[in-house]
Image (tube, rainbow, N blue to C red; front, top):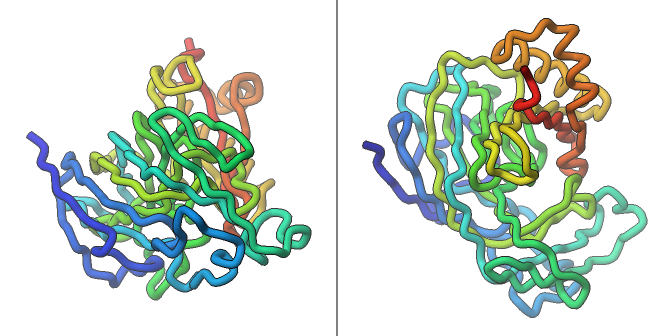
Length: 307
C-alpha cells in the first residue's frame, strides 16, 4: 500500500544545492502531491502588461517545491518519477523577457500574452486557441557538485528540461547523484511547443501528483522517459532518451547513443542494428533551446516496432 504526502511551494527553495535539508521523506513507491507556483512566483496577474514584465524580480523566479528525500535511493541509481496528475490553474502567462529567448537580440522589448485555461482549451490572448496540454517544466534531483546552482539550465539529473512529454501518463527517469535523490519540482505549463523558443510557455500554477520509485538496476547518463501506448501521439509504447549540454550536435549524439544502449539492454539489439533503427524509426527533436548554457535534445522512438 502506498502513502500520499503533500507539500506546498511555500515549503521550497530557489536553485539546486545538495545541502538543502529535505522537507519530506518518502519510501520508494510512495506518492506525493505537490502544490507548485508559476515560474514568476505569483508576480503577474490576469491583467499583466509589458510594464509588469519589465518590473519582474527575476531573482525569485522559478521557485521549486521540495526537496523530497526518497529512502533507499543511492548515487548511481535511477529515480522513476511517474506523473500521475497535473492540474493546472485557470490563468497563464507567456512573456518576452529582455535578453532571454532564442531571438532575444531581435525582440528587446518586454511583452506578455495572458491565457485563459479551460478544461480542454487554452485561449491564448486574442491570438489562438490551443489544446490544453499540462506538463511539468522542471523536475530534477540535487547534483553531486557542492554549492548553489541556478535552476535555469537543465542537467543530467534533470531540472528545467522544459520537455512537453513530462506529462500525466509518463514516467521520467532521472540519474541519482546524491543519496536520497532530493527531488524538487516546479515551472508547470498548460501548453508549449518543442524548443520553447521565446523563453516561456503558457506559464501557470499547478497541483501535481507523482509516484517515486527507486530503480537500482538501471544506469543512465541523462534523463529518459517511458511513454505508454495510450499517451499521444498514438502508437505503441515509446521511449525517449536525451542529451543535455551546451552543444546541440553533441546532445544529438548523446541522445542517439543512449537510445542504442537502451535498445541493446531492453530489446537485445546489436549496436549496429539499434543505430540503424534509430535512423528509420526515431524522431530527433529539440525540447528546449533557451535555458543557457545547456540545451536538451531528445530521441523519441516507438518501441513497439521492435520484433
